[in-house]
Length: 432
Image 1 (cartoon, rainbow, N blue to C red):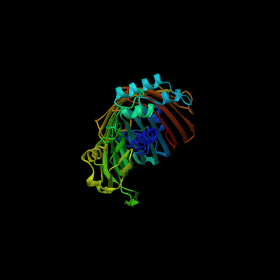
Image 2: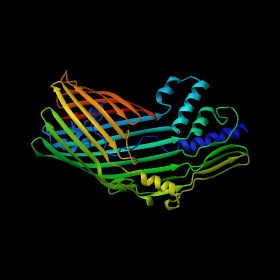
Image 3: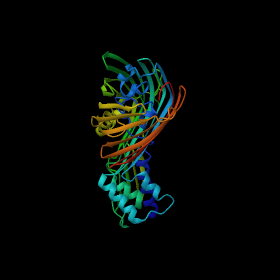
Image 4: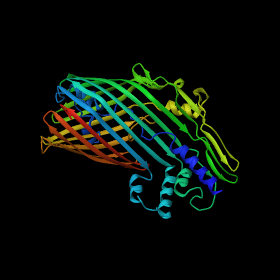
């Protein structure tokens, strides 16, 4: 009996936790190629210039401060987040037996938040350069969101006996996994349209390399009768899909997008505004996916399972709706830049994303960033921001060796549902 319970628990949690690789929510707009922008907390709608302007505000490409030529060499950015039980909670008890009182407090947090979130993402930009007011960027990113419902968290913390030590029924309904990977080719242009006024646009072609969605349909561990039932259907890429489509690896979807931006400068004050994804037609190709029922049953008499691939049109409506929801939504941002002195630059932003869809980071942000150049070869940056349900802070710096810039930054985000750590690194020429 103990063996069956252990096997059942492992089967359920394996199906939920390893249904897909880990990453984070996908960014609704083009990822920034600038680690310096991360040091400012992406509060750079009014201050972004050179290759940083391609993603933040294309109007900055027309500003006189934009370098005649700038190039970023494979900048990378990564995020990892867990909550409401965060990385700090786990690190505190690393290598130790977690007391029941602490596990109980963690479980109470998960119950209050509706479950445990696990998220992370990675982005790389093989190419980002500008020549005068023209910018070109090629970026790729991968992302996943995973959610375990409170019963699944209790199973992970206490095993099949649960918090009380008495066998009971566990339902894992509500757990989910979303995964996506895509690349974006962007071409941006900025120009002056009057005294101290610039406008810009970024056009994007987006290729979805892979997508998967899974929703628990009623997985459960019961004590009487003793059995474990997995019901975790998923939509995943076809096993024998095309390796390359129009020169891009493994296409599960495509679309085009458009961002618009404006800058207005009066004296030492610059104001900026951007609408990301004013147009975005990304859609996932259902025919390039397959449906996996993800069903299994383990009881005293043995077990059965069904993980056979089927045509995607046999998938439950809930999965198809979840797939349709994985699309970029508009993001609206306004910002200001001031230079109180030649050694200090201040920038502030307010940003709001339309609800739903693909996004990296919070739905709302209001923050301020600062860059200090007391040493011309070592500009340092920092930021603080209020975000949806919490706050974020971070620091960064660049080492300037003539035209070569080595930039790095790190930020910590804390809010009600999860804590997130973000890091970025950029090697560039002509700008940071």
